[in-house]
Image (tube, rainbow over all chains, first blue to last red; front, side):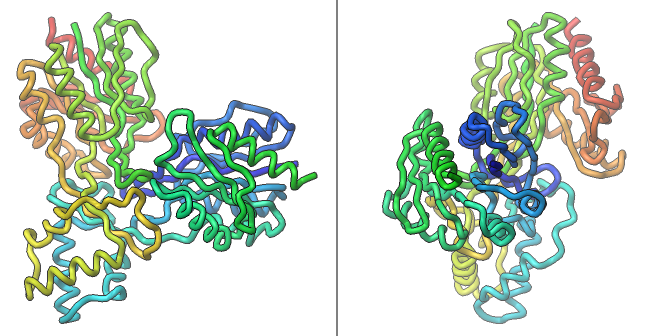
Length: 248
Length: 248
């Protein structure tokens, strides 16, 4: 039996010295890896340099990535090469990638020009050109301006490529919201079941994650809560047991 | 004898799950700490959780910070409490802090309104209002938009507060540029001597830092190159020796 786990948070480069980083300690991913490893299940583990790594193990294969595209490439390679009984995608992945940056001066020039050409209120198509220009070739954005404008472009969800390559794998996704009601959390998680083609979603709320507490709900394809845990170890056990139950 | 070292890179929160991070491994800072510690000099060391930490030592005091404001507060506290023979500020600090974020829809609305009110080309004062609004109270920016606009506001340089509190300390600053000529690097470093009131600036170029290579020039108050090194260990030794020479 063989599973693929992603953990940690991706970083998207703004320039050579700055990135936008999604925070994730990678601790839950480590607990997940341990649960499978102690059941003699091989774990392919995709994470970042910054995230906590699981303890070395003969049945553990580590793959390090940095950004969203790295992750997409690495997953494609692994999914085409190996067959996984389950994929547990706990990594926090950037939804947006920096596509253009402007000093205050350059930004003023760009939008004033847009308004002059349009001679009326701008719409989405007009704005699109702000990010379509050539990516600033400055290696380090000069700090010689009072304001900086960053335009970020939405990126395709990495989780959506998983079932396209391995339709038969058991896919467990994660949905993290911040300080919402339980109902909003569960409704949003159910929506992401469909778009991600996941078999299960672990729904959790950052505002409730502190110290040793990490409440989480595991939701199945029908939108039913099949388990509820209060900390990372519990969530890891719940997911591992659910995966192993399917394999039997 | 007692020195204060800053090392690593700061992070500025965009929302509860995303930050803009300045990259710095903290390895040079560790070499610096070791150089002083092996000469029985007490080191107060300000760094981040992510950066590499020096090996524990009785004469080493660690202080962890996250963002630019944290760093400014921590330095103020230390500089008011202790007298330092030297401050070596190698930390990569954000020049900009996220002040506002907009979905594509909200951004369109905001700038169309600005143009309607002004009825002509916008100037810097008009743009200022884009970042003056209340900071988005969304805890996690929704990914339900095609583009994201981040407005970042320039922040005061932390290094400038050091001599204001301890005028008599020996201050060593760092200037990092990316892929510039040696002349541009040295000219820019000389300019920052004046604005930071540093006694020395270590000028380096990210494009030339790879594997074990890390070329750096140490420039004194008169803008003269007093030393040139090719790797982190060499730079750490050069700076430590320069500091100790002043103390004799």
